[in-house]
Image (cartoon, rainbow, N blue to C red; front, side, top):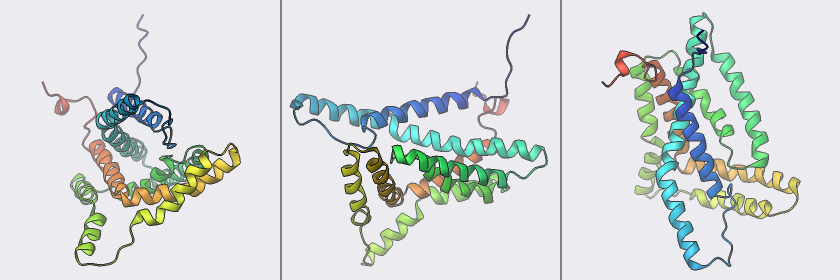
Length: 240
């Protein structure tokens, strides 16, 4: 008797998502979930070792894990959209509702951890709706433009022309300072309030570091990989 259970899951996607989540969790542990501190009584050699481990793990995992997780968000949208399209249904409304629910879940999670990414993803995720029926070449062009960080180039040109720009850290600084104070408070309610206030600084950091454009571009890359069937088992994806 054949007891093999057949599913339609793409195993490589599950493996990549698992790698990304474990790596991100490991990095958040290093950061003490945004409560950055080292005990003052630590010996010098241990502080040096901590710094080396920090730099090594972020070099090995940070960019890769976040990029993979973001790309798979766009790929998952493609899977859902293509299945609904086969049934003759428009997925845009349902996806928009999913993003609203994700935003709500992100708000709840922010109360416990200001570094929550789901709230940010739920906002940027709406970019996938208008591109869902575009040709792969058009999707690639839009993704490339976003990954080239157009806002950062505009800011650079303005600075070259001596246009006065307010450094973003001067705006976000008070939010971060307030956050670090409330995170050390023993009151749970105070911590939750501080996390919501600090979330403003967190979102400003996303903007100042070019994460808004980068995340949108990676969402589209994931969607494009779905259009190209790159994660499927077929002759085109076989190297040898």
